[in-house]
Length: 128
View 1 (tube, rainbow, N blue to C red):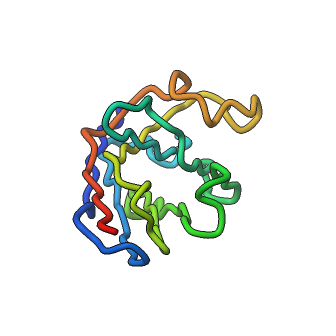
View 2: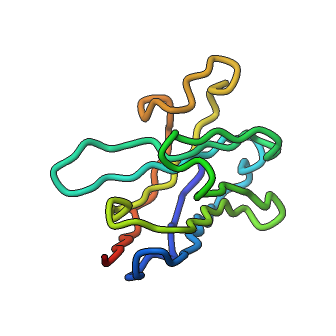
View 3: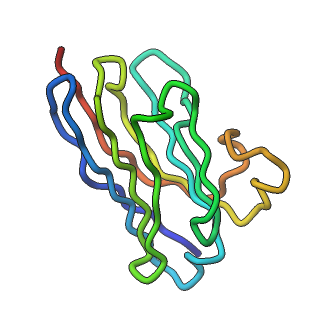
């Protein structure tokens, strides 16, 4: 069973950068695909990015392309989200999620219901 703990959130000015980390416990990290989602106040949870088991395949929501980078280090059981050129509208609680489902084969990586495990979230606040 995979447990997820996010870190790295905080307050940053618009145009700045943050790197989120999601550390996992358990022995099966390399066998799960990972995703990042976010939820702003009063809004639904939104998919941000996803990465395959080995890290060779990544996908991003359109509004994050070119600004965010998802990566993983299977030796450290950690997935990262590098966020650059942050905007006020990026303010949200960011969650990492894990799934053993074949989300890349089924192209369902953007659906929150496809993920089995979730972290507690980390707050990112971008001031304008």
